[in-house]
Amino acid sequence: MDPFPAMKNDLLLRAARGEKVEKVPVWAMRQAGRYLPEFREVRSKHDFFTVCRTPELACEVTLQPLRRMDLDAAIIFSDILVIPQALGMEVQMVPGKGPVFPNPLVTPDDIQKLNATPDISKELGYVFEAITLTRQKLEGKVPLIGFSGAPWTLMSYMIEGSGSTTFSKSRFWLYRYPEESKKLLSILTDVIVKYLVGQAKAGAQLLQVFESHGGFLDETIFNDFSLFYLRRIASEVKQHLISEDITPVPMTVFAKGAHYAVESLAQTEYDVIGLDWTMDPEKARSTAQKYNKSLQGNLDPAALYGSCESIAQRTTEIVRKFGGKGHIANLGHGMHPDMEPEHLNAFVEAVHKSSEELIQK
Ligand code: 1CP
Image (cartoon, rainbow, N blue to C red):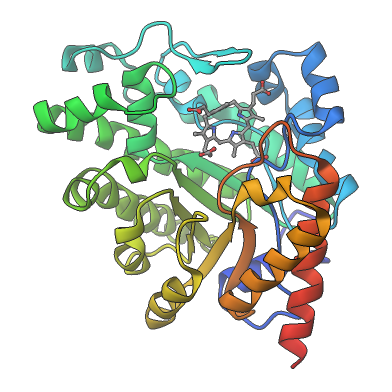
C-alpha cells in the first residue's frame, strides 16, 4: 500500500512514461530559489545548508513556488553538493560566489582521504526525511522529484573547488590520471545509486540526474567518463528497486551542453532526456521516438527577461516543436536570481494553454 496521499495530478509521471496527457506538464529547474522574495526571507534567517538539512525548512521552500504558480511538479530543495559533503569534504556557500570547497582534491592521493563508503542514511537521511515530509504536505497535488548530481559534475566541483569557466583542473585529471579519475567516478557512482534508491524509497516519484558540466567534454571523453557512469546509475537504481519489490520510478538525465550525446543517452535506461536551450527539439524528438523516450525542456531561461507576451509566444513555438506527447516542459537550465516570478508564471500558463490547444486538435 502506498503510504502517501492519492495523486490528483500525475501529468508529469504520465509524460515521463510517454503516455497520453490532456496538457503538457511543466516545472522549472531552480523553481525554488532566490528569485522568490519568500525564499530570500527564509535565507535571511538560515544559511543555505541549514535549509537543506532541516526537513521542515527544505519542505517549506520546496512548496513556495507551488503556492504562486500552477506547476505540475515539486523538486525537493537540496543541492548536488551534499554528496561531496557525505564523502567528508567541506563545502561552504559563499554569498555572491556560490559553492566553495576550502580543501579541494589536488592529486589522486587525496582520494584516500574521502570516506568512500559512507552510511547513506546517516549522512543523507535528512534529505530522505525532507522528501517524506514534503510528500505528505503536498497532499497528492503534484509529484515530487528527487535528484542527484552526476559523477563527472560532482568530481569537477571536488577538484576545482568551485564553479569554473574552463574546468581545466578537473579536465587535467581526465587526461593525466585517467585510471584514478575512473576510481573516483566509480566511488561517486556507488554513492549516487544508494542515494537515489533512498530518495525513491522515501517518496520521490521521479529522479533527475544533473550532468551540468557534460558540455565541457568531447564525445569520446564523455562516453568514457560520463556516459558510462550515467548508464550504470539508471540501470542499478532500477535493479535495486525491483529487487526490493518496488516499482522503479521514471528517471531523467540532463547532460547540459552534450549535443552529441542525445542519441547515446536515449539508448540507456533513462525515461526522459533533458535538453538545454541550445539543443534542437525537433531533431531530439525524432531520436527520442526511435527509442521510446520522453524529452524535457527547453526554453532559454533568458527568455524570461522578455515581456510576458514574448514569453507566451516563444513557449507556444517550443510546445509545438515537441509535439505534445512525451514532453515535460521546462527551461533549458535554471532560473536566475534576478528573474521575476510573474514571468515564470507566464511560461507556465503558456505551456498549459498552448499544449491543450495542440492536443485537442
Ligand atoms: O544562497 C543560495 O540560496 C544559493 C542558491 C542555490 C539554490 C537555490 C544553490 C547554490 N543551490 C540551490 C538549490 C538547488 N541546487 C536545487 C533546488 C531545487 C530547485 O531546482 O528548485 C537544485 C536542483 C540544485 C542543483 C545544483 N546545484 C546543480 C545542478 C543544476 C544546475 O544548475 O546545473 C548545480 C550545478 C549546483 C551547484 C550550485 N549550488 C548553488 C549554486 C549557485 C550552484 C552553481 C554554482 C556554479 O555556477 O558552478
